[in-house]
Image (tube, rainbow, N blue to C red; front, side, top):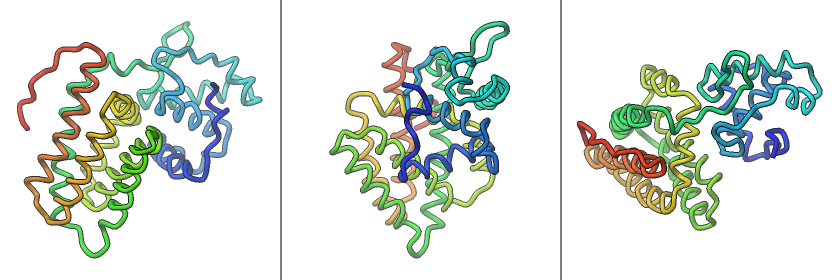
Length: 247
């Protein structure tokens, strides 16, 4: 299936906005370069384009009715964000993120999500948690429907909402530095058997811990969610499970 064969639906507009921000395409999302980068990037993140898949610039140019120049520029944007590999004199391919140091990535994520949720517990006020509650309800429905895509995006936006409430610019920059490659890894971990169910249960408990401002429990839960995601990926790749120096 080609990336542009799956146009954004109304629900996907939020996903498009997130990709526009992560790819730094604000104001260019409707250009040829922006459209190609968004479509191919979304297809990589959601697993439509598999790791190590070839990205034929000639075929993409025909598909989008353009020259190869906008295609090359779009692929360079994706390469900068860790989704595409462009070796010299060879065809670009989708990066195999499972060959990356996922242990290091998930250790950083665990530390940062743990810190973020402590800020959320301290800072939330009024109806700040209403959106998080809606997203947990969306996770429950998606899990019941076995709808991985809807579950994935509800999970992603739960984290985005936590970051918004935490209101710490350094946290935002660190999460942004992990890039879209981090999103792709997260989707792969959620696709493993039993992960949607376990993550849904944990997010229900996490939201209640945040509501009661139980910082210790909220931090432990969010770091455990990240650790379990790492374990799922390690098992998928038959990689040795390393001990974390914290938990």
